[in-house]
Image 1 (tube, rainbow, N blue to C red):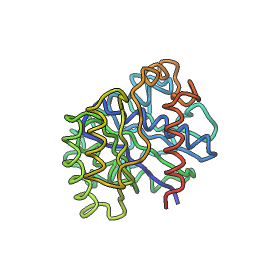
Image 2: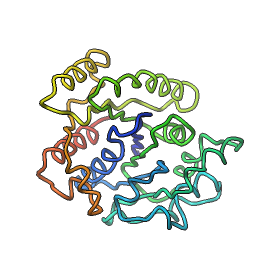
Image 3: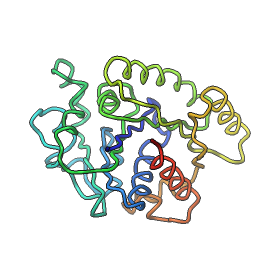
Image 4: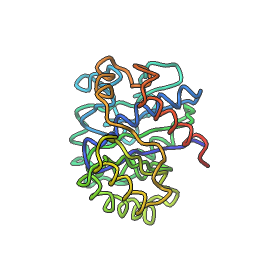
Length: 254
């Protein structure tokens, strides 16, 4: 069964795109068939793989707006034979406006995934920094959620609201949705404040906080310039090692 993992947090700059790109690369290195889906109008994931979001004839926008659009037709290679990306175009910024009065507006991505015949072991969904219709489509389509949490007090404040949203989606729209875990990101090992944030996360959410912690590093920003994830750019970097550990945890999760 395909695991469909949405990476969500309404706060920007917490490592959603970084997590999707590096987790995808790590799972692919484990011989898994991986699809990356870019639901963010900023299209950072799309740009990471060398695609121009201003010049895409077909994209995720097509899936959400056109009920007859095919997921298979918009897929592009993500640098490997068994890893692909469903890219975002700049048009995606207007998708929520077009979907306001549409039928099954929260199920458009799910419908496209269910009609797809290309086999994947994992689908990883990147989402925008909001809890609007795009993120809702990701939550409704997914089997699991990962929540990256920047190790900063202000970033942590919105986590409870996101948890409530996930619970409402599970109760009303997607009963199979499960929280895979909260992922501490952008961790500064020299900061007592960061350590306190991680401690509080564990006190509140217990075992739902991954043991893996993603430390802050400029290399995470350097790798996409070369159209790569950090795992491809510098496999021995501690950030790459951390994402490989995360991939092992997720691949073994039932």
